[in-house]
Amino acid sequence: MLKKAKFILMATILLSGCSTTNNESNKETKSVPEEMDASKYVGQGFQPPAEKDAIEFAKKHKDKIAKRGEQFFMDNFGLKVKATNVIGSGDGVEVFVHCDDHDIVFNASIPFDKSIIDSDSSLRSKDKGDDMSTLVGAVLSGFEYRAQKEKYDKLYKFFKDNEEK
Image 1 (cartoon, rainbow, N blue to C red):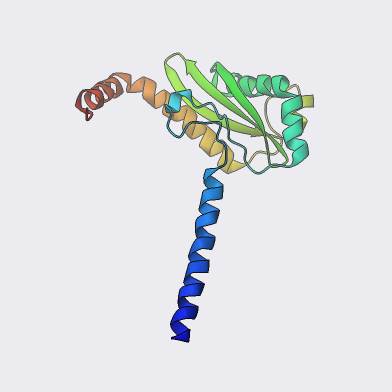
Image 2 (cartoon, rainbow, N blue to C red):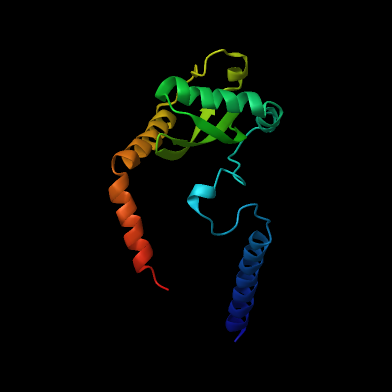
C-alpha cells in the first residue's frame, strides 16, 4: 500500500511539473501569427542565436547592411532584390531579401561579417559553403519558377479549384 501511495505521489508531481512548463511556453508573445502566407513572411520575429553586440550592430547599421545585401544580389546574379529584415546572427549579421525581378520570385537570407560595413564590395571575406549553396538554391528556385511559370500557375489553379470548402 505504501508503494502505491509513493508511486501515485511521484507520478502526480512528475506530471504536474511537465504541465507547467508547457503552459509557460504558450504564454510567450509571438510577433508572427500562427498561420500566414509564405509570401508575406519577411523574417519578422526570427532571431537566431547571436551575440548582444551583433544584435546591436545590426540595429545600428540596418540601412547600410541592407544596401550591401541588395548589392550582393545585383553584383552576383544581376537581380534587384529588396531587403526586408536585418538581424544579428552569431557574431555577424544576416540580411533577409525578397526578389520579384523579371518574374523571378524568391525569398532568401545572406549572412555577412560585421566588416562588410567598411567594405566597398558586397562579397564576403569568410564564405561558408553551406550558406552559399542554400542561397544559390533559393535563386535557382526563382529561375525555375520563371521557366515553369505556366505549369505552376495551372497547378495552383488546380489546387484552388479543388480545395476543401
